[in-house]
Image 1 (cartoon, helix red, strand yellow):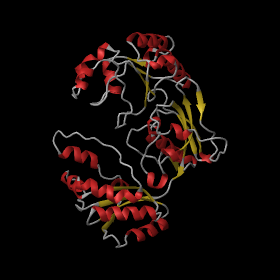
Image 2 (tube, rainbow, N blue to C red):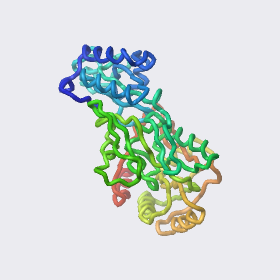
Image 3 (cartoon, rainbow, N blue to C red):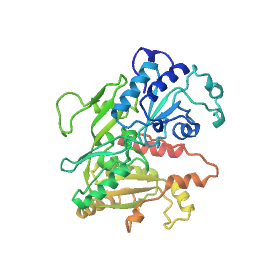
Image 4 (cartoon, rainbow, N blue to C red):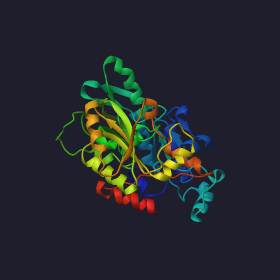
Length: 392
């Protein structure tokens, strides 16, 4: 996050960084500050990103405010950090020409080369990590179907806590599921299970945010409906920490519905994509859908799992609803309109956990590296996207 104030109109210098860090050391405990290279590599490095200058681990909203104020005063950029599962550079610390220690890595970057670990030196930014000290559930409001949490808690931990509460009669869950290990602060803006439940935009009720000038705002109240001004939460969701740092979130909870998983094969990707489009348009109660083509299923079969899949373009579904609802949906899906065949359902929860397609792909090609991203298009363009990608 770019900090606010006149100082931020220039790049920071090592002197600025030292001054800001010394201010923070006056009140933040030593065990909440890390500068050793091993920790900096753990939090701030990938083949495409550089190192921060320090990792700060706040314990409260007040700590975040004080960090932001010191950073603004000395022109130090801030990188909010939670689970570290991001795949697209959201937590990459910036590189500055004003930092002489980064000479080697800047020179290699200018040549289009990737710096080695030996080339990397601490940068001039603070990485603010929430996973150590700000990963708690503040309050579960079961009657209102919401939960208040800190940014460093994972969606897995939320659902684990809710599972433990079911004995007290709270049959609720948080359905947004982007990737194992993802934490709420980093999830603000994305997520799977979007077919039925929507993304994080639909799951967030309000946010408590520290702005670049250190001021704290709450985007709205907990009531589901509010006409008192604009919904500022949508401004921060998807902003990737550039507009403010989220320090508390109120999330929607949903009733737990019976689920089952099914798979159906098609002769071509086009027919699978057409069926997928119609399924969504017809309002079938599906939580999530995955499309795997024939090449992907061939790779999965090569790993020797218990199930041998038809090596044809296939749709994997997670159905949600009452048994009667799911039977009605299945009747729609079994239609022969798009030549679907071999519709199979999971026999138990273990089988319903699914196929680890990503790791099968990485392991299929020796020394392969995988770059994962999302492509988003209107539903009407989905068949063209998939078939065009297949041709490429």
